[in-house]
Image 1: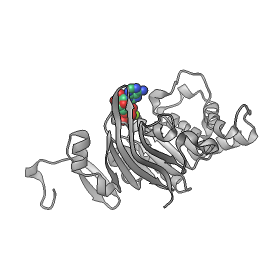
Image 2: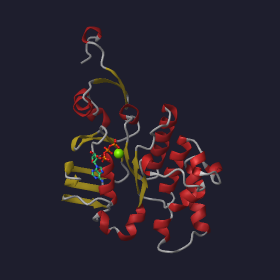
Image 3: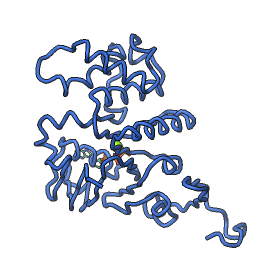
Image 4: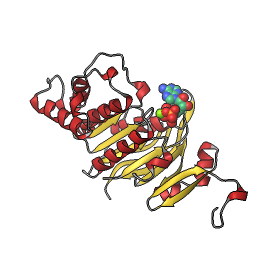
Length: 265
Ligand SMILES: Nc1ncnc2c1ncn2[C@@H]1O[C@H](COP(=O)(O)OP(=O)(O)OP(=O)(O)O)[C@@H](O)[C@H]1O
Ligand SMILES: [Mg+2]
C-alpha cells in the first residue's frame, strides 16, 4: 500500500513542554484511520504537523512523499475539518460561502470563484446531505448540519486526504454514527481519512486502524487488536471491556470480577 502520510520519530515541543514524543506511524492510501487519546494528548498537534502548520523539532514528516511545508500545489489535495472551538460561528456567512472557501487552495491566488467552483461546492454539499442548506447562515444551522458543512468545505477541492479533528463533538450518537458511515462511503471513493475522535467504541466498526496517542504513540493497528483493556487503562486510566461482534467491538464498563462469565477476561 502506497503511504500517504509518513511520520518518523517526530518530536514536538510547545511552550517549553514536549507535546509529541517520537511518533512513528504511516497512513496508507485509501485507509480510514482514527486517532484517539485523552485531552491534551497531542492529537490536534499531530494533525497540524501533517498540515505543515507546526514543524517538529526532530523527526521526518512526509505527505504525498514531500515535507508538508513544501507541498506546493499538492497542498490542495488535503482537506481539513478543524476542531469546532477553532471556528468563529458568529461570523454572518452563508453555508455555500463556507463550502466555497474549500476551493481557494484549488483556485490559486486572487482568482474569483467560477461556476465550476460553485458546482463543486454544491456537489460536496449534496454528497454530505445538506444540499438544501446553501443559503442558510452558518451560525443558524444545527451542530450536526454544521459538521457536515465543514466536511463539505474539506471535500470541495476533491482532496485525496482529509484530516478531521473531533468532527462529532456535541452531536448525538445516532447522528455521529451516520456521520462515520458517510466518511466510510467517502473512503469508498478512494479518499484517505485520518480522524481524531473520542468515540473510541463507536468508531471501531468504521475504521481500518486506530492510533492511540498519549504524547507517545501507545499503539497503532486494527481496532480489534489495539482497543483493549490495557490500552484504555494506559490512556484513560480506566479499564473497560470490549465485546467483539464481527468487526464491531462494543465498549462496556468492565463488570465486577464476581459477575464475569467464564471465558471473560
Ligand atoms: N500553541 C501552543 N503553545 C503552547 N502549548 C500548546 C500550544 N498548543 C497546544 N499546546 C499544548 O500541547 C498539548 C497538546 O495539545 P493538543 O491540542 O494537541 O491536544 P489534543 O490531544 O488535541 O487535546 P483535546 O482532546 O483537548 O483537543 C496540550 O498540553 C496543550 O496545552
Ligand atoms: Mg484537540
